Amino acid sequence: MFKKILSLAIVAMMLMSLIAVGASAAQVEVAEEAAAADDVASQGAEAEVAATGAGMIYFDAASAGWESASKILFYIYDLTNGSEFAAWGSSKKLGGTKGDNNIWSFDAEGLGVTAGNVYTIQFNNADTNAETYALLMDTSCFGDTAVADPGTLIENPVDSNKKSMEAHWTNNSLGSRLQITSIGNVVGKSIPSTTTAFDMLVYFLADKGKSGLMNALNFQTDKTAQQIIDSVAGTLNLTQADVTKAIKQAAEVGNADTGDKKDWSSDWDASKSSLPAGESGGSTDTSSKSSSSSSSTSTSSKSSTTTSTSSKSGSASNTQTGQEENILFIMLGVMVLAAGVIFFVRKKERA
Image (cartoon, rainbow, N blue to C red; front, side, top):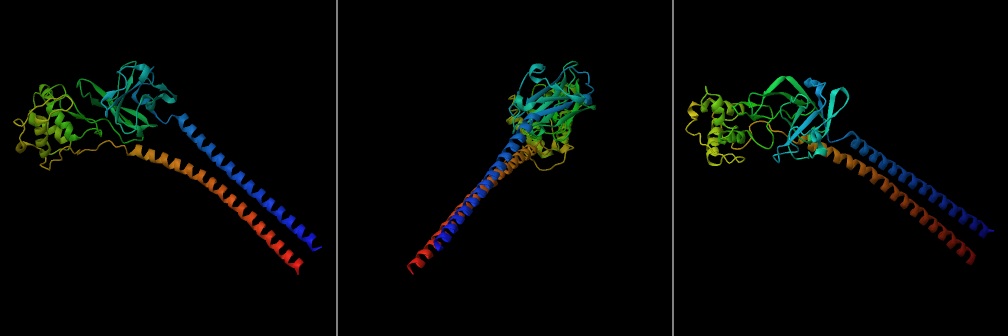
């Protein structure tokens, strides 16, 4: 009788262990399905980003009064490498796509705009050849919309007889490119990170072509070199010490782009300058530079998203490992219990 009861008990324990194993397996399956669902959701989110065009930039043609334009060109110049992606007027490569409410879009990333480089962009009405002034751009501008300001006209740096309307980003602080024009005026708002205010002054002093002080004196005949230098340096927030050093560098080193050198030491006198004395900043920029912090933030955000996704997958994996440990402990427990029962039965039979 006792053996029958023992047999039934052992069978019952085995059934319980099978039920526990089945329940644990079911939980593992649920965990795997949850992990798969997370992966699908993650892939769906990535697909959505791709569909919206993460590397796109936009231009509000209506803000420039170009509602009837048949084509808007997005002319992008790489300041970091000193190169253009396509010649001016290349509508096949630089043409945008018209969307709702006269918002034109362009795939800047597809053109070759990459993180770490600084660019300028000009929007051009292909019908009238009207254009906006150069606006600084980097990958932090992806997804942003540029807006024109017809009420603000900026002198063309090469041809002072031409003026272009200013443009600005809706959600980015990068502004119109600050430059010294061919006749010695300083235009624009933002100095690109590829140069400094000091270097701009050096190049202006050294250049013997249409971008230097020599050319400016031919147009501003009522001003002396001293007056133009003070005016340019003052707008760039430079000091007398900066100018002294820049004049020396223009004579000895010159313009790295053109190779030109020019000595203005006899045409500028610090004692007659209206600039503050100050300390020489050398080639340190005393004005605001363009920054890639937004791009870095965006990259960090993407990394955080990736980490989050990995964390979810890791949770599913840990859950599965825990279930496997539970199964092992249950089976060991049943085996120990069965061994104990058999031990006591044999002991009783011997007794």
